Amino acid sequence: WPSIFSGLEIIANRVTFSHRDAGGSPSLFDLLVSLGRNHHATLALADLHAELDYSPGAMVYIAGRVLEHSVGSWLNGERVVIAHFMKDAVHDRVGVPRPSFPMQSFFLELVGGKSRKRIRSRR
Image 1 (cartoon, rainbow, N blue to C red):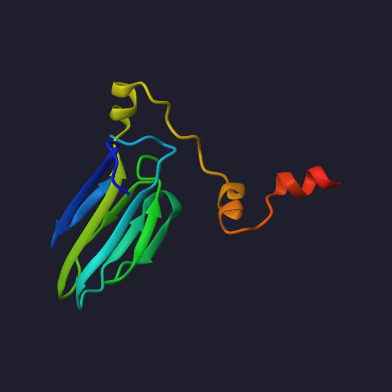
Image 2 (cartoon, rainbow, N blue to C red):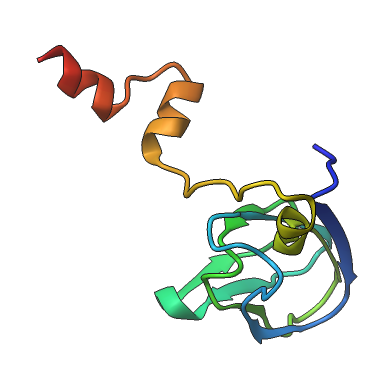
């Protein structure tokens, strides 16, 4: 969904050193889409001591400002990543408040589930 807040970056055949996205807001998620051919890359989330399979077709939402992340070298193939993110400075520039932190109830409501808040209010 394009907006004035959106950024889109294409990264081709590059190692991504461990970093946090300084331009984002802690409450915003980055969408990372791994594309390419025949590579077996790994997305490392240092703060969580986790490594995720980052093969072609993988899509990951992460709080890039909060979580330190990297992609090291891979053995073979071509690797392309599309990173979709929002720049926090645009919120300041146009005087729009930042989105609040996402809550599980937001996602449950989107898929037709009942949030905890609703369940508690019925009792």
